[in-house]
Length: 260
Image 1: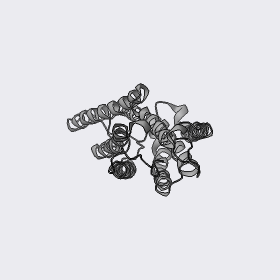
Image 2: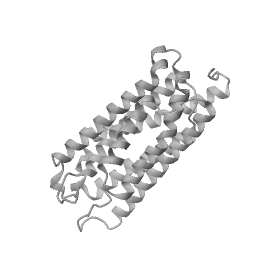
Image 3: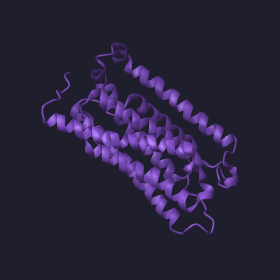
Image 4: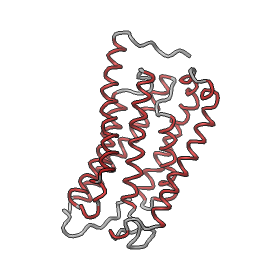
């Protein structure tokens, strides 16, 4: 939601093209990550995107892909992710019960639980976005929305919604790996695509804009933003370390395959 930003004269001419390229690279890597997850899940007969994180992703993608984003490339990216999510949902509903044998109530009702979570997360994302736009949050920055300039700063809106979703996903992935202690549905390539995609399309993208266009992106350096970014990045690093240990344990025969 920043592809139509018009920077002032003091901003380097390369900033917007470079950050746009970083955003597109991040989006492409996340799409690849989804595809790799689906491929591994079908082979391993499991699901890999944590239940709550997948619902949060779907709620986020429906909100911005169908209701909020205006620019063609931005809308298309959200809609592509939403389409790819169909494969992730399939693996959850098909193989999810196998992962919840220890919790029969969840095992029997995983589809209903997931549906409720998706509706809830869609409601959270849409209500937040509508509130942001209706109250013209960030209007002083002179950004445009809905053909009106100045209007609510949807670049900042996208930052907060993506940052929270990313922190939730990263922490949930670590929790899932710890609970399973098995690399079913994931591998180093999934982790690498997800981590580099987040670095490119979120942290470096907004970081560069904060450095070279600070008056329009001061929120990026706020304590809350740094806290959320730190949590997400640290969780991604921890996940990689844990995944390496899982591989070592698997090579030593310390991990038994999941039974049907």
